[in-house]
Length: 343
Length: 287
Image 1 (cartoon, each protein chain N blue to C red):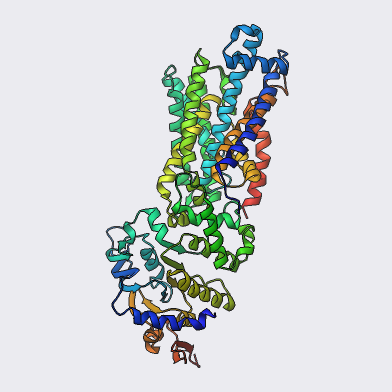
Image 2: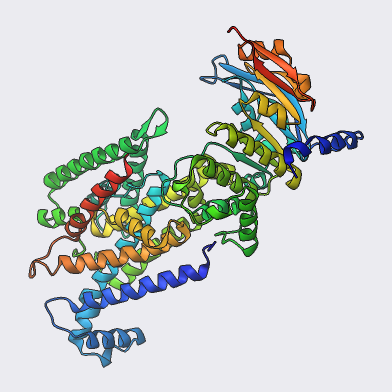
């Protein structure tokens, strides 16, 4: 018997964080302007000490002005989507659940676009609208996915796919008729893209806001992790063991919707990360949500930063949307998991 | 010690000792319940009123044909639903009014297992039984591990400890599920048709085990079963349900009357008394 301890969680996440750091450094190094690892580490070190004047200004611009904000967004989006995916998998008791597959990302995207049109300059409005879109979609998919009062795995996935295509059609309709943004940018954003510029000039404050939302939503979900372990074994059994199943489900529902909304509001609908990352983490570290949630957060960050680095190098000097990269890797794995789990 | 043979002697002692009646572990008083399709329509099914008591170390078997209300009664005993009238008390507190985790510390319910979504080790599964005792993120203490290990050895499942749940046979899985319930250290152990998927050897083994657990740990065991003769052999009290009505409560010898059993189960049955004072129901010839 080797029960989970806080120490093992810290050790595992520390290891993953080290991997993330390596990926981040590689990502910082990758790009049109050549900069060595030594220079990157030096710039990061001086930046951490707040000594801007001791670094060549072009290094400062490339690291802190261009590449690091994008990496930070990647970390945010990857963590949010992976934790949301792990949450949806427990909430719906479906190993194939993922914000993208369930249409929740499309719902969040629709919400974000509506807010861009209706209230383009209100800080936080886009996140709130994306959250509302995500929450409404998962609610609809949940009820459409029921069959005879029971949640049915295949029906649920079909409901998600239908919701996703329906919502995408509305989004295309809105973009085409309103014509408020340039179409190519929007199309990229729909595919999932990290290259869109920050809406405000003060990037660090904006990042702080986004990461605070991430921390709160992921923290709230983490607080239910031992309840989720039991719910995964069976809702009825969890109730017998003293879990307030209804309350936990509401909490996870709100937190996972918020995380999806947060991710989509900055990057559009990036697919399959929320599916793939929790699965890989399960294979590596087991199914205990007390470890799975933080491991998925860091793992998701690694996945998105790596995918985005690839996305902006494979066809350089142009860029692919990062969502295209994750779909290329994720769709085959999804098929594999589906064939294995649907008996 | 052979628990099956030894079971009747301590039972006699208990009956004598019970003369100035101790407060019951489980007290069911005039409990009734009804299901209806909608709030306004007439109830489709009514249960009760049912009254009985159970002391520590007692096994009560709930018998009855399908759709006689056995599972509903078990849900009422587990405090999962509130009775329409009457009371279910466990150690003096109303079961359905207990805080969820307090309830899980006192009552364990063993049902048919649900399908697991992800792989889980046997020891992880059994440790889940310690959930009602944990705090915050509920990291398991060494004491939890010890109790889980004890629970596993009480059902003779120590060698299964590191196996995957989905690789266990039906009988092994059932023992592990029972171990998780034991890890809850419940006062009241409820089992819903635990003998269903077992062969005859497995059934006898399970009931012997329940007898021993009741004696050693002091659980009050309530078991819903279809096994007339095993129930007569191993339980201290039988509760006979038919169409939602409680027809009889009492010792096996009191309850097993051929006319009643025939009406309830709709089969030609004879009852013979065995030398140990326990009845046995036999199908009459020419059916």
